[in-house]
Length: 51
Ligand SMILES: [Zn+2]
Image (tube, rainbow, N blue to C red):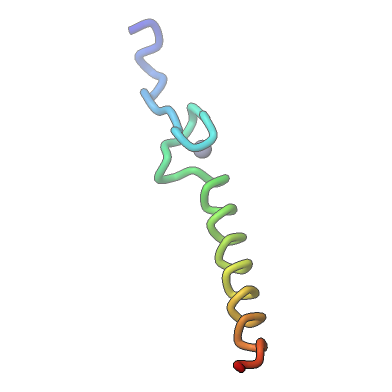
């Protein structure tokens, strides 16, 4: 180990080395965005008249 003090972390989402996938701030931000978009789409779908 060249850097024993450096935690062996490697985010598989954004490639960051200071955190893991579970703690990825980018992933959380994207998840929030997707949630909002999904809610918006649902709202639009419910407006569509049936028939
Ligand atoms: Zn990350």
